[in-house]
Image: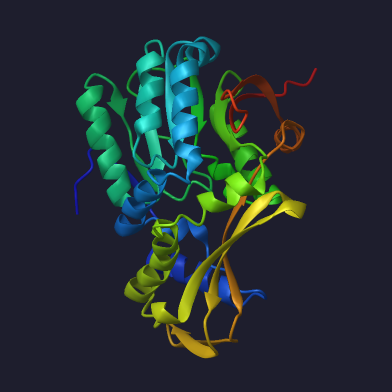
Length: 323
Protein backbone atom coordinates (compact mmCIF):
# COMPACT_ATOMS: atom_id res chain seq x y z
CA UNK A 1 0.00 0.00 0.00
CA UNK A 2 1.30 3.44 -0.91
CA UNK A 3 2.59 5.49 2.01
CA UNK A 4 0.86 8.91 2.10
CA UNK A 5 2.86 11.69 3.82
CA UNK A 6 1.14 13.57 6.69
CA UNK A 7 -1.83 11.18 6.56
CA UNK A 8 -4.56 11.22 9.19
CA UNK A 9 -5.98 7.70 8.85
CA UNK A 10 -9.59 7.42 10.03
CA UNK A 11 -10.86 5.04 7.35
CA UNK A 12 -13.72 2.66 8.24
CA UNK A 13 -12.65 -0.65 9.77
CA UNK A 14 -13.96 -4.02 8.52
CA UNK A 15 -16.30 -4.03 11.54
CA UNK A 16 -17.66 -0.60 10.50
CA UNK A 17 -18.32 -1.85 6.97
CA UNK A 18 -19.89 -5.09 8.20
CA UNK A 19 -22.20 -3.23 10.58
CA UNK A 20 -23.39 -0.89 7.81
CA UNK A 21 -23.97 -3.77 5.38
CA UNK A 22 -25.84 -5.98 7.87
CA UNK A 23 -28.04 -3.04 8.87
CA UNK A 24 -28.84 -2.30 5.22
CA UNK A 25 -29.62 -5.91 4.31
CA UNK A 26 -31.99 -6.20 7.27
CA UNK A 27 -34.13 -3.33 5.95
CA UNK A 28 -37.07 -3.63 3.58
CA UNK A 29 -36.28 -2.92 0.82
CA UNK A 30 -32.68 -4.02 1.24
CA UNK A 31 -29.94 -1.39 0.90
CA UNK A 32 -26.18 -1.24 0.52
CA UNK A 33 -24.22 1.94 1.37
CA UNK A 34 -22.96 3.69 -1.76
CA UNK A 35 -19.94 5.09 0.12
CA UNK A 36 -18.33 1.64 -0.16
CA UNK A 37 -18.23 1.77 -3.97
CA UNK A 38 -14.77 3.33 -3.81
CA UNK A 39 -12.12 0.69 -3.33
CA UNK A 40 -9.17 0.81 -5.77
CA UNK A 41 -11.09 -0.79 -8.64
CA UNK A 42 -14.27 1.17 -7.87
CA UNK A 43 -12.39 4.47 -8.05
CA UNK A 44 -10.85 3.47 -11.38
CA UNK A 45 -14.26 2.43 -12.74
CA UNK A 46 -15.79 5.73 -11.69
CA UNK A 47 -13.07 7.59 -13.61
CA UNK A 48 -14.05 5.46 -16.63
CA UNK A 49 -17.71 6.46 -16.14
CA UNK A 50 -16.77 10.15 -16.23
CA UNK A 51 -15.34 9.66 -19.74
CA UNK A 52 -18.50 8.10 -21.18
CA UNK A 53 -20.41 10.30 -23.67
CA UNK A 54 -23.69 9.90 -21.76
CA UNK A 55 -22.18 11.09 -18.46
CA UNK A 56 -22.51 14.86 -18.74
CA UNK A 57 -21.84 15.72 -15.09
CA UNK A 58 -18.04 15.75 -14.90
CA UNK A 59 -17.30 17.52 -18.16
CA UNK A 60 -20.04 20.10 -17.48
CA UNK A 61 -18.75 20.84 -13.99
CA UNK A 62 -15.14 21.04 -15.23
CA UNK A 63 -16.20 23.52 -17.90
CA UNK A 64 -18.07 25.57 -15.32
CA UNK A 65 -15.05 25.61 -13.00
CA UNK A 66 -12.74 26.70 -15.81
CA UNK A 67 -15.10 29.54 -16.76
CA UNK A 68 -15.79 30.67 -13.19
CA UNK A 69 -12.58 29.93 -11.25
CA UNK A 70 -11.46 33.57 -11.04
CA UNK A 71 -14.90 34.73 -9.87
CA UNK A 72 -14.99 31.94 -7.29
CA UNK A 73 -11.51 32.88 -6.06
CA UNK A 74 -12.59 36.51 -5.62
CA UNK A 75 -15.69 35.43 -3.70
CA UNK A 76 -13.74 33.01 -1.46
CA UNK A 77 -10.85 35.38 -0.68
CA UNK A 78 -7.14 34.79 0.01
CA UNK A 79 -5.36 32.50 2.47
CA UNK A 80 -7.95 29.74 2.59
CA UNK A 81 -7.49 26.27 4.00
CA UNK A 82 -9.17 24.27 1.21
CA UNK A 83 -10.89 21.13 2.48
CA UNK A 84 -12.31 18.76 -0.13
CA UNK A 85 -14.89 16.07 0.63
CA UNK A 86 -14.35 13.08 -1.67
CA UNK A 87 -11.25 14.18 -3.57
CA UNK A 88 -11.45 11.62 -6.40
CA UNK A 89 -8.98 12.37 -9.20
CA UNK A 90 -8.33 15.95 -8.05
CA UNK A 91 -8.86 17.54 -11.50
CA UNK A 92 -11.42 20.03 -10.23
CA UNK A 93 -9.31 20.89 -7.20
CA UNK A 94 -6.30 21.77 -9.31
CA UNK A 95 -8.42 24.26 -11.26
CA UNK A 96 -9.47 25.98 -8.05
CA UNK A 97 -6.03 26.00 -6.44
CA UNK A 98 -4.59 27.54 -9.60
CA UNK A 99 -7.05 30.43 -9.25
CA UNK A 100 -7.04 30.91 -5.48
CA UNK A 101 -4.92 33.66 -3.94
CA UNK A 102 -2.24 32.36 -1.55
CA UNK A 103 -4.00 29.16 -0.37
CA UNK A 104 -2.56 28.08 2.98
CA UNK A 105 -3.19 24.33 2.87
CA UNK A 106 -5.18 21.60 1.15
CA UNK A 107 -6.91 18.78 3.02
CA UNK A 108 -8.49 16.07 0.83
CA UNK A 109 -10.88 13.82 2.77
CA UNK A 110 -11.36 10.57 0.86
CA UNK A 111 -12.63 7.14 1.93
CA UNK A 112 -10.53 5.36 -0.73
CA UNK A 113 -6.86 5.12 0.30
CA UNK A 114 -5.72 4.52 -3.29
CA UNK A 115 -7.67 7.52 -4.66
CA UNK A 116 -6.30 9.67 -1.84
CA UNK A 117 -2.71 8.62 -2.60
CA UNK A 118 -3.16 9.56 -6.27
CA UNK A 119 -4.66 12.94 -5.39
CA UNK A 120 -1.78 13.76 -3.03
CA UNK A 121 0.79 12.72 -5.64
CA UNK A 122 -0.73 14.98 -8.30
CA UNK A 123 -1.17 17.96 -5.97
CA UNK A 124 2.39 17.61 -4.65
CA UNK A 125 3.73 17.53 -8.21
CA UNK A 126 1.75 20.60 -9.27
CA UNK A 127 1.77 22.66 -6.05
CA UNK A 128 5.03 21.77 -4.33
CA UNK A 129 4.94 24.67 -1.86
CA UNK A 130 1.36 24.03 -0.70
CA UNK A 131 0.97 22.15 2.59
CA UNK A 132 -1.08 19.01 1.94
CA UNK A 133 -2.74 17.40 4.96
CA UNK A 134 -4.73 14.36 3.73
CA UNK A 135 -7.35 12.53 5.76
CA UNK A 136 -8.56 9.03 4.90
CA UNK A 137 -12.05 8.93 6.38
CA UNK A 138 -15.79 8.70 5.82
CA UNK A 139 -16.76 12.37 5.38
CA UNK A 140 -20.42 11.65 6.16
CA UNK A 141 -19.35 11.57 9.81
CA UNK A 142 -17.62 14.39 11.75
CA UNK A 143 -13.94 14.58 10.77
CA UNK A 144 -11.39 16.53 12.85
CA UNK A 145 -9.29 18.70 10.55
CA UNK A 146 -5.48 18.74 10.78
CA UNK A 147 -4.05 22.15 11.64
CA UNK A 148 -1.81 23.79 9.01
CA UNK A 149 1.63 25.09 10.00
CA UNK A 150 0.64 28.54 8.72
CA UNK A 151 -2.56 30.02 10.10
CA UNK A 152 -5.38 30.24 7.55
CA UNK A 153 -7.70 33.21 7.29
CA UNK A 154 -10.68 30.88 6.82
CA UNK A 155 -11.71 27.43 5.58
CA UNK A 156 -13.29 26.64 2.23
CA UNK A 157 -15.12 23.30 2.02
CA UNK A 158 -15.17 22.00 -1.56
CA UNK A 159 -17.79 19.32 -2.31
CA UNK A 160 -17.99 18.88 -6.10
CA UNK A 161 -19.54 16.29 -8.39
CA UNK A 162 -23.09 16.62 -7.06
CA UNK A 163 -22.10 14.05 -4.42
CA UNK A 164 -24.48 15.75 -2.01
CA UNK A 165 -27.25 14.42 -4.26
CA UNK A 166 -26.37 10.85 -3.20
CA UNK A 167 -28.01 11.50 0.16
CA UNK A 168 -31.65 11.92 1.11
CA UNK A 169 -32.82 15.29 2.46
CA UNK A 170 -32.21 14.55 6.15
CA UNK A 171 -28.73 13.15 5.46
CA UNK A 172 -27.87 16.09 3.20
CA UNK A 173 -28.94 18.56 5.89
CA UNK A 174 -26.75 16.75 8.44
CA UNK A 175 -23.74 16.94 6.10
CA UNK A 176 -24.35 20.62 5.38
CA UNK A 177 -24.76 21.36 9.09
CA UNK A 178 -21.43 19.64 9.82
CA UNK A 179 -19.83 21.69 7.02
CA UNK A 180 -21.10 24.86 8.66
CA UNK A 181 -19.38 23.88 11.89
CA UNK A 182 -16.14 22.96 10.12
CA UNK A 183 -15.88 26.11 7.99
CA UNK A 184 -16.53 28.50 10.90
CA UNK A 185 -18.04 31.96 10.84
CA UNK A 186 -15.60 33.35 8.23
CA UNK A 187 -15.51 30.32 5.95
CA UNK A 188 -17.62 28.97 3.12
CA UNK A 189 -18.62 25.81 1.27
CA UNK A 190 -18.55 25.45 -2.52
CA UNK A 191 -21.07 22.75 -3.49
CA UNK A 192 -21.63 21.17 -6.90
CA UNK A 193 -25.29 20.42 -7.66
CA UNK A 194 -26.82 18.65 -10.63
CA UNK A 195 -29.84 20.66 -11.76
CA UNK A 196 -33.16 19.27 -12.96
CA UNK A 197 -33.37 18.42 -16.65
CA UNK A 198 -35.28 16.03 -18.94
CA UNK A 199 -35.28 12.28 -18.30
CA UNK A 200 -33.83 11.81 -21.81
CA UNK A 201 -30.59 13.46 -20.61
CA UNK A 202 -30.45 12.22 -17.02
CA UNK A 203 -31.28 8.53 -17.28
CA UNK A 204 -28.71 7.56 -19.97
CA UNK A 205 -25.95 9.07 -17.80
CA UNK A 206 -26.47 6.21 -15.34
CA UNK A 207 -26.99 3.52 -17.99
CA UNK A 208 -24.09 4.08 -20.41
CA UNK A 209 -23.99 1.83 -23.48
CA UNK A 210 -20.53 0.43 -22.72
CA UNK A 211 -21.69 -0.77 -19.30
CA UNK A 212 -19.11 1.10 -17.21
CA UNK A 213 -21.75 2.09 -14.65
CA UNK A 214 -23.03 -1.49 -14.40
CA UNK A 215 -19.48 -2.73 -13.72
CA UNK A 216 -19.05 -0.01 -11.10
CA UNK A 217 -22.27 -0.97 -9.32
CA UNK A 218 -21.52 -4.70 -9.36
CA UNK A 219 -18.00 -4.06 -8.09
CA UNK A 220 -19.57 -3.22 -4.73
CA UNK A 221 -20.45 -6.91 -4.43
CA UNK A 222 -16.90 -7.89 -5.41
CA UNK A 223 -15.59 -5.75 -2.55
CA UNK A 224 -18.02 -7.21 -0.03
CA UNK A 225 -17.08 -10.75 -1.08
CA UNK A 226 -13.40 -9.92 -0.60
CA UNK A 227 -13.62 -7.99 2.67
CA UNK A 228 -16.63 -9.48 4.48
CA UNK A 229 -16.50 -13.14 3.49
CA UNK A 230 -19.82 -12.84 1.64
CA UNK A 231 -20.81 -14.96 -1.37
CA UNK A 232 -22.71 -12.66 -3.73
CA UNK A 233 -22.82 -14.27 -7.20
CA UNK A 234 -22.36 -11.42 -9.70
CA UNK A 235 -24.12 -13.42 -12.42
CA UNK A 236 -27.26 -13.42 -10.28
CA UNK A 237 -27.52 -9.62 -9.94
CA UNK A 238 -27.96 -6.87 -12.54
CA UNK A 239 -27.56 -3.09 -12.52
CA UNK A 240 -30.75 -1.04 -12.89
CA UNK A 241 -31.01 2.78 -12.73
CA UNK A 242 -34.22 4.76 -13.31
CA UNK A 243 -35.18 8.43 -13.05
CA UNK A 244 -38.07 8.89 -10.61
CA UNK A 245 -39.58 12.27 -11.47
CA UNK A 246 -41.73 12.37 -8.33
CA UNK A 247 -38.55 12.55 -6.23
CA UNK A 248 -36.33 14.26 -8.86
CA UNK A 249 -33.67 11.59 -8.53
CA UNK A 250 -32.00 8.64 -10.15
CA UNK A 251 -32.49 5.50 -8.09
CA UNK A 252 -29.87 2.81 -8.67
CA UNK A 253 -30.57 -0.79 -7.74
CA UNK A 254 -29.09 -4.24 -8.00
CA UNK A 255 -31.82 -6.63 -9.16
CA UNK A 256 -31.80 -10.24 -8.03
CA UNK A 257 -32.08 -12.31 -11.22
CA UNK A 258 -33.51 -15.32 -9.41
CA UNK A 259 -34.62 -16.53 -6.02
CA UNK A 260 -31.44 -17.00 -4.01
CA UNK A 261 -29.74 -16.93 -0.65
CA UNK A 262 -26.61 -14.92 0.12
CA UNK A 263 -24.40 -15.25 3.19
CA UNK A 264 -22.57 -12.30 4.75
CA UNK A 265 -20.26 -13.07 7.68
CA UNK A 266 -22.24 -16.25 8.39
CA UNK A 267 -25.69 -14.60 8.24
CA UNK A 268 -28.10 -15.66 5.51
CA UNK A 269 -30.27 -13.24 3.50
CA UNK A 270 -32.93 -14.42 1.07
CA UNK A 271 -33.67 -12.60 -2.19
CA UNK A 272 -36.79 -13.11 -4.29
CA UNK A 273 -36.56 -13.21 -8.07
CA UNK A 274 -36.75 -9.62 -9.31
CA UNK A 275 -36.15 -8.15 -5.83
CA UNK A 276 -34.58 -4.66 -5.90
CA UNK A 277 -31.69 -3.80 -3.59
CA UNK A 278 -31.13 0.00 -3.43
CA UNK A 279 -27.49 1.11 -3.69
CA UNK A 280 -27.55 4.81 -4.60
CA UNK A 281 -29.64 7.96 -5.02
CA UNK A 282 -28.63 10.84 -7.31
CA UNK A 283 -30.88 13.84 -6.64
CA UNK A 284 -31.39 16.60 -9.22
CA UNK A 285 -32.02 19.98 -7.61
CA UNK A 286 -33.96 23.16 -8.19
CA UNK A 287 -32.55 26.35 -6.69
CA UNK A 288 -35.50 26.63 -4.35
CA UNK A 289 -35.10 23.10 -2.98
CA UNK A 290 -31.33 23.39 -2.55
CA UNK A 291 -31.66 26.78 -0.82
CA UNK A 292 -34.23 25.27 1.55
CA UNK A 293 -31.87 22.39 2.41
CA UNK A 294 -29.07 24.86 3.09
CA UNK A 295 -31.34 27.02 5.27
CA UNK A 296 -32.31 23.99 7.38
CA UNK A 297 -28.58 23.54 8.02
CA UNK A 298 -28.11 27.20 8.98
CA UNK A 299 -26.53 28.17 5.66
CA UNK A 300 -27.41 30.60 2.88
CA UNK A 301 -26.49 30.71 -0.81
CA UNK A 302 -24.11 33.67 -1.20
CA UNK A 303 -23.09 33.14 -4.87
CA UNK A 304 -24.41 31.09 -7.80
CA UNK A 305 -22.70 29.88 -10.97
CA UNK A 306 -24.35 27.77 -13.72
CA UNK A 307 -23.10 26.36 -17.00
CA UNK A 308 -24.63 27.90 -20.19
CA UNK A 309 -27.25 25.12 -20.44
CA UNK A 310 -28.25 25.37 -16.75
CA UNK A 311 -27.46 21.68 -16.37
CA UNK A 312 -25.07 22.01 -13.45
CA UNK A 313 -24.46 24.58 -10.71
CA UNK A 314 -21.86 25.62 -8.16
CA UNK A 315 -23.16 27.29 -5.01
CA UNK A 316 -21.05 29.12 -2.44
CA UNK A 317 -22.63 28.82 0.99
CA UNK A 318 -22.07 30.99 4.05
CA UNK A 319 -23.39 30.62 7.57
CA UNK A 320 -26.56 32.48 8.45
CA UNK A 321 -25.59 34.97 11.11
CA UNK A 322 -28.39 35.69 13.55
CA UNK A 323 -28.73 39.11 15.18
